[in-house]
Length: 309
Image (tube, rainbow, N blue to C red; front, side, top):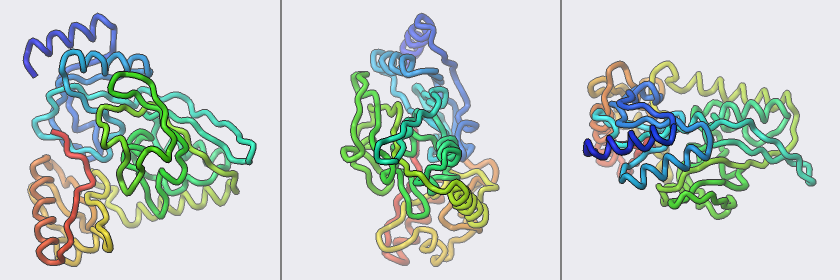
């Protein structure tokens, strides 16, 4: 970013009394604990501030990256020469509306964590979100990538999503028009759109059974996943007809390490930060894994984590 651009954006943000800082280290804001600094770090508290920030970035030609819990993001070691917008501050209370058919629709802000939404569903005795218990992302990130686990996906419960389009207009689309697929959505095709909130439809269930299911999924995660190490969750998408972790294990790559990045010995589908790992370490390791798996099995692995440079 040119110095003059930075100066004018700084002035514009200050004149509008918008909350921001500069040269914010990004590693602490991601579950991988990797990445350099953001030139600008913007922390909107509501949709109006978010809209204004996006408009200022467009007006000054500054690229921006929307960040939730940072659970699927790998930032470059050089950082991000633009504006990272932290959506976690936009975290309005979950609103629950009972429906005539006996279901309930919950409206939740994009900056809320999936954990908070799951807790609200459990408290109200609503079933359908058990699969999401333990997924460390925000609702916005979960919608963006159609997050899922244990046979469930966001598309199973989503009814509609409200977002700001490339012109800053507030729009709403029904779930049927979101192109929700395996770890993808329409928002990948429209990176200028910014998710603001989502609505999910759940059904009444037995509160004790819901709690037991959530606890079971949490225990499975603790037993099978390397939660004791920083990571970005599953590193590779599941290839058609196989499982990435099993392919990596069968190729003898368990424990393979480049710098501080390692294929987890507990679950080969995870790349973990053993300490001091860099973005370059992770990329070199994943490229090596992709090459070996392709040569030995014919399967082409695709990274699930978002690499941001």
